[in-house]
Length: 244
Image 1 (cartoon, rainbow, N blue to C red):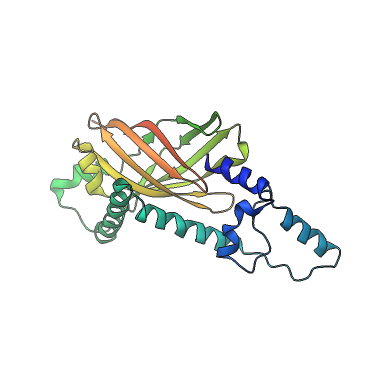
Image 2 (tube, rainbow, N blue to C red):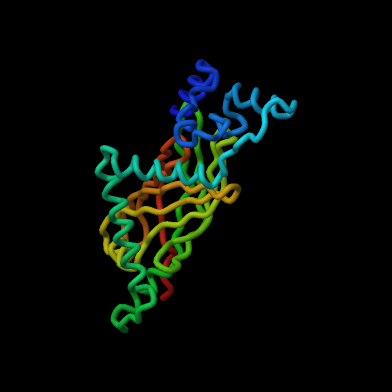
């Protein structure tokens, strides 16, 4: 819904719906940085530059725009009213600190079976959810491999009928051995991570909660914070059956 509001505001205000970009990067000549964003002033200045009537147009590098957007999302999540958002980010920091200290440590023989369980692949079932204006977003996650205290793999996000919002990328979910043990012991856990697009390296924050129904399977909620929306998927997970 936020995307539609911005587009309508941009059209009604002749491009000023994206004016916040000017406050962040005052020396850039664009308000709408995406090619499809309605910004007549940007197009006029660009056309004049081709005629030699304007010079030295300044464009903000994409990495700076992505960095500013990511920082703003983190601030919103930390300063927002949702205690779950604050809790999950705190859990992520705690888990990452724990992972760095134990990932290469030797395990006693008594915990060997549990550690092996943490190295099994994790399967996330495909899921879909509704988005603004009768749209539909579908999420497909490849089998995730446990590596250095994280579950890593690829994801594909399809948004219909807004196909320009679809993307593919790499997915990383923080999951220490201790977190996996708790999950397989029947305790629900909060997790966080990030999704990085293959096309332009944009980073989305991922928040979620996994609730086991048995040792090897359960339900999981994904919340992916994109550029202009927060998409929530409810689906299931499972580990493959252990070898006898």
